[in-house]
Amino acid sequence: MVLVQSRNLARKIIFTNPVFLNFQGHYVNRQNDVGCHCHGTDFQRRTFISLPKLSRTREYRGRQLVGHTMEQMFEVVSDVDNYHKFLPWCKKSIVFTRSPSNLKADLIIGFPPINESYTSNVTLVKPHMVKAECMDGKLFHHMLTLWRFSPGLKRELQSCVIDFRITFEFKSAFHSHLSNLFFDQVARQMESAFIEEVGRRFGPASMQPRNLLLNQPIKS
Image 1 (tube, rainbow, N blue to C red):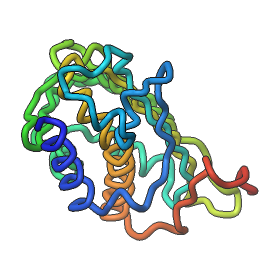
Image 2: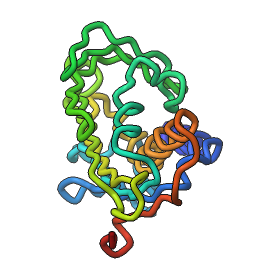
Image 3: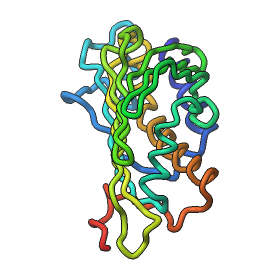
């Protein structure tokens, strides 16, 4: 029963939020975690309680060439105060300490049946990097979100390359099971939400985004 409810929840979340379809990153399974193969008959026969105790670490990597500058991308990704306004499932984002190179924020993520809060320590290296790590350990054993921005095409000044990585391990077996079902789609939607917000703030992109994990290296 729990498996059926989880799959129905995953379908509802994914297909009612089509934004993520613009991006196709790479979902990485840690240590041959067969618990992620959620469409096999063996998995379908299991009950939720009898799932094997395998690694719950999840990792996603994306690499995009986009038609926005490094500075524009950095400004949006580092604007943690306003995450709740444009980032899917972020219900609240409050920065309580800030310096030019670091900030700490409380965030609440929520979609039924999950509504959880955690504290994030964010390292800023303008305009090259934004790194966020979970501090409190209540929701995650560990969580890292890393954005790196580098120059794009020489012939197109309004462009840059985005390297995006997110890796985490939930403490809860239930949360971990949900992440098996739709984590890669959620991560893609996160990527896309930031790109769209840059477009809203700074105007249309100078070019269509290109997935560099699938294509050949860029030519300047």
